[in-house]
Every structure is written in structure tokens, then in C-alpha cells.
View 1 (cartoon, rainbow, N blue to C red):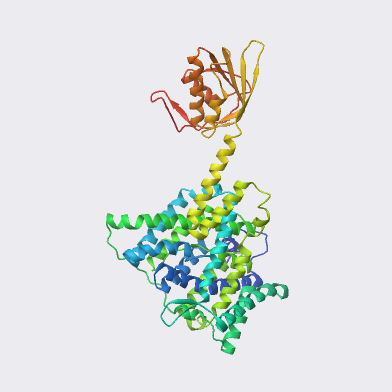
View 2 (cartoon, rainbow, N blue to C red; view 1 turned 60 degrees about the horizontal axis):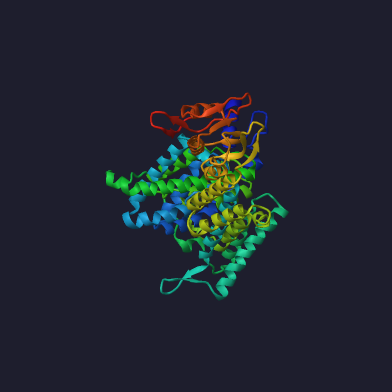
Length: 536
């Protein structure tokens, strides 16, 4: 293998972070860290995939196959090395209605269509709109998911009673479960202070599992959830009628799943990027998620997206390149095909302890300390997104947060518009506008002027203002007509050249100046229709 080939391979697996002249990322220590990190993630993926399969109403292998295929494809092609994808609860809660009403074959077809929509989102670079998500929404997202992860672990403290109904543990079983969870968390906390040879979460799982197996402690294990034994996933075209009626059934679900999957994936992309200090590719991630789900639907998987909990485990365990995510997917497949009996002996308490530490590391604790130092609007948005994430789902929470933030921003800007007035020696009156003129401030703009009381010559100076949209231009038109009805002259100063052109078409008197601004107005005026439309 030539040096150039090695360099290309190194650059690909390291996610583009390696450059010629750098130390090769494939030292023995780095490979060991990446593989052990992948093994830790794979162990944590098993109960999650099984649990989400139950939520969606499908066989556990459907969730496990999704975790393997989605995890592998996104590991190789995704926009952020080290990020973990698989079957998630946010998608499972949407799938359950589809499976209950139409069966699992419709689910597979929906996952394929979901993937196609995500690919299109990547091709048209729709992922860039994730930049519009404000920071308070990000904090609410992180805190909400941390709470969701915590609540999901509480189901492991339930057992099936003699009547088949789930009931909470009590007495000695509860004490043993809690004790092992706390022991796992202590090992994860102490281990980095002793050695970094193996990831702390893996050490916690191995030690607690060893104690449980060696002493025969009677606590719930992975095998109590369901058997994870299976073969390799097989190619399978969804067995559904290829008709317009079928499309009407699966399209709404596919759109919702695609949106939820991309929002969660792109927000996780940003979060992992902040932790690792590396910027991820949003469009690349959209395409990777789409290809992964398209393939998954063809191989009997339930689809998936990025998983913040497992991604945090990987990052905290030292996983930084694609090797860790690839190895996690491959280890998971090995568990399914060859090592199911061994993995089924792992106590759930160990995995719960790992996830509790993920919750502690994921929750943005600093958000609690800054509540008194940030605007009340940001506090409301952050809490609102957190609550909606827990009560409903991530997609709705983010949309609600963005809408509330946008409305608050518009309101604040609308309140900034005001005018300073002065009377010139010739008796004319000048309105010196300050602040943006847009749809949110046009009502306040109209209230500033008193055409019936103003002198015969009125000047509106926009030097310290900005005309933003069609509503602003229409507001200027309307105020000009009012002055015209009173037989008075209105002059407009310091507007952009395109404003000159647009308003001159409507017969307004413009005053040119050398210091006129040069920003663009996002509308154009049609003489034929007498209306505004999208323009510059």
C-alpha cells in the first residue's frame, strides 16, 4: 500500500481531521481506544434497541438490525466521526400507530420512503437550516433528552407479576438493583482517576457483570428482556401493494419520521461538534441518514437516527474517529450472531448505571445557574423546549422553541422603531427614523405620523433605519397616500437604490443622496398587478 493510499485511508477514517505530516491516527493506543469505545457503545445499544422495538410493537431483532445497519452506514458516511446512530425512542413512538394499523411490512416501506426524503433534504442542503435553532432551544433539547434518557431507564426497575402486569420492584430485589447501579456509577467516576487504559463505562459493565455472574446474584439481565440471538439480516423488499392508496398511508408517517430523525441527528451533530471542537457536515449527515434508512428498510430494520446517549458514551470513552462507530455496529452484529448467550447474562443494572452517568454528563447544568442572568424570553424558551421534549417529542419541541424565539425576536425589534422629530427653518418637519421597519413594526410606524397636523412639507429620513420587507414598503406607500389626501408633500431620504426604484414606480418623491445605503430589499413591486412579490 502506497503512502498516498495510506494517507487517504487515514483521512477517511479520521473524518478528514488527519493531514499529511501529522502523526498517523492509527497508533496501537488509538486503535485500542477506538475499539474499546465501540465495544462499550455496542453493549449499551442492546437493551436500548430491544426496548424501542417493544415501543414500536415489533420483534427485538427488527430494532437490533436497525441499530446495526443505521449505525454502520452513518459511521462510514456521516457528517461527524464518532457520532452513533441507531433505533431511537423518538421514532418508535411514531411507528407504533403504523404497525398497529397496517402491519410491519408497511413500516419497512415507510422507512425506505423516509430515507429517500432525508436524502433529498441533504441534496438540497436543507440541513443548513439547523443554524436557525437558537442556543436556548439547544439547551432545552439537551436537558429534555437527558430527562427522557433518565425516565427510560426507570422501566428497568419493573418486573412482570404473576398476572402478567408490570409492577415496581420492592424489598431486597430493589436494594440489589440500586446497589449495582450505584456501584457501576462509582466505577465510572473513579476509573479515569486510576487509569485510562480502558473506557470507564466498559470497566463498570465488566466489573459488575463479573460480580453478578460469579456470585450468581439474582437480578434482571439482558436476556430477561428478550432473546437477541439471530442471523445476518436478509434483503427483503417490503411486501405491500404498490398503489397510490399505499402511498397515502405511508407518506405522512415518512415525512414525520424523516423530520424527527433529521432534527435529532443534526442537533446531536452540533452537540458532538461542540464537545470535540470539530464542525460536522449537516448536508452530508442528512444524506448518510437517508441512505442508512433506505438500506435498513430493505433489510428488515425499523429505521433510526442519531442517538445522543450512545454518542456521549462514545465521546466520553475516547472515540473520535469513524473506527469507533464502525466497530460499535460490527460488535453489535457479532453479539446477535455469535455471542447472544454471553451478552444476555449482563445485568441490566450495569447498563442502567452507564446511562445514568450519561444523563449526568448530558444535562446542561450550567443552564440552571444562568437563569437569572439571561433574558426572560430565553428562560421561557429553554424550559418550554425541555417540557415539550419530555411530554411529546423532539421535533415538536424544536419547532415550538424556534417559533417562540422568532416571535420574541420580532416583537423586540418591533419595539425598537421610533422617530426623532425636528422643525427646519423653512417650516418643514423631519422624522428621523431609528430601528427596523418590517411587518412587526408597521403598525407602530403608522402611529408616529400626524398628517392632519404636520406642515406642508414632511421629510422621512431612513438613515438610521432599515426597510426590510414588503410590509415595510406598503406602509411607506400608505403613509404617502395619507399626506397626499391632505394636499401635503412627502419626501423620503436615505433609502436604498432598489427602494428608490420600487417606490418611484408608485409615484413617490424620492431625494437622492451620496450616502444612501446599499442593502437589498427582499421584495419587488409589480406595476401590472399592483402587488409585491419575491424579488432581490
